[in-house]
Length: 214
Image (cartoon, rainbow, N blue to C red; front, side):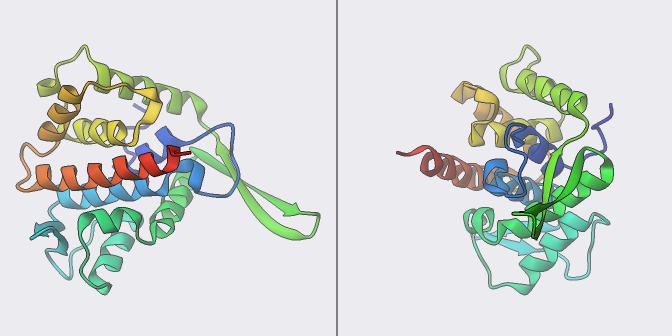
């Protein structure tokens, strides 16, 4: 599939993209969700682990070869220890901007240079491969609602679904039981990932509540 090689944070960024608001900013595109995807991906790869609720690098020299993930891993290494929930909100633009540039390089987004008031340089971003994003959204709806049993989903797809449900993407209305099953499935073969997913999901749900409050 055309979006198969995309990383978990890149897929979440595309899912959250608001085609009606293509401007350069990040609030409409949920940088916290993108950061959550990067944290989970690093945990899935065994490069971040949970130590008493703290996101902890496993190997100080390891890398993934993915600029987004390696940038976040370096940030965690160089920072004071923080819980997972803190990392979902702390300096999220670092990860979001890196994912956005990665998606431009992949041809999924396009960067358009403009001048504000005819003077100040600015860059706006817009979806380039709309069909790819539409297909990704439809697949995500099926992950969130079925008919395929959760046990038959890949752990990576389950992680995508669990994070999307926590963030309230696509107007999902995902049943609580299926959301929990997706979380369990995402961490089926990675020790401690279920706990990490719950911490990250809690942060996303809290962020959604704040964003939608009057």
